Length: 399
Picture 1: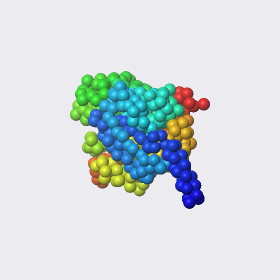
Picture 2: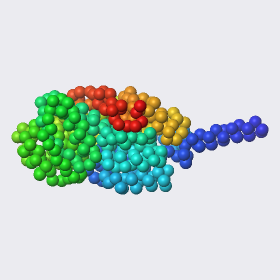
Picture 3: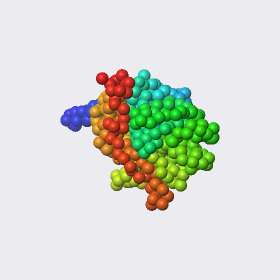
Picture 4: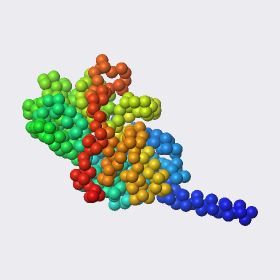
């Protein structure tokens, strides 16, 4: 009996110690993004579902504690995103926030998380400021950024002869960053930027902006936007005969959801840069088809990136033996990423995942063999080429 009681006592202490390593005995991950606006198809509730898939694939618990996924719509407004983040951190004890589509929201939430020592893994927003001057010891950037888009799409278009540009730019942090990075790429390759015009987020009428771009005489109209804004600009450019007259469009941030919305008849021939394509190999097809069974659509790189971010976060907690942010952040930077999204990728000191990017060209309707068969892979861009050198990022964490 004495031996039995001692055994029970040791087991109880071990169990209590394991649970104490997980704050509140549960790991909570919040997926905060646009769930009702122009970016809802590329992230939205699809990212929430991808996060749930990651939890299931991990096994449903970590260090003996259950894992919960929360979702919320920030409506592309920094004040709403900040309010949700504070409530999650202060009231609901959320340990990490992910996706964060829309750069203005991402930067605001990242700042709050840094103050409260909580992890953010951004998969949806693009500005390089996330791993630049705004970086924190707890912030990470997965999937893509504006530097990688500029290197991929911008570089390819200039090389193909598109050496004069005019930008239609979304009027917020992401658009500015994308225009700035692409301008540097164009000019470094010997091209010239003839001008730019800014349009509001979630814009429906691009006629005035497209007329300015047309009158510039630029060979390329660079769309420094995303989601429905990019789709609307492409459709209206076609309706106005701009592309038929010889000017080319460069969709600097396009997702497979955009190509699906446009249709191959409108989107054919477009170049774009992606970090994930469901039909690339057997591993990506297996994941993509599982995701499609649950959502009705193939995953965007944001949704696949969210799956990867959640999975890697849980692996980091397991490796650290708990969810304390300092220890988890250290493991996230130490451990390579090896999953369906990131194949042997590493995380830089500024929190940037150095994952491979792919230059895609949209197929013609005749080339496509069926629904969601949309891309030719034209080039592979290693992560250390696609992304900014961490030493030049402006992140104070980088020595």
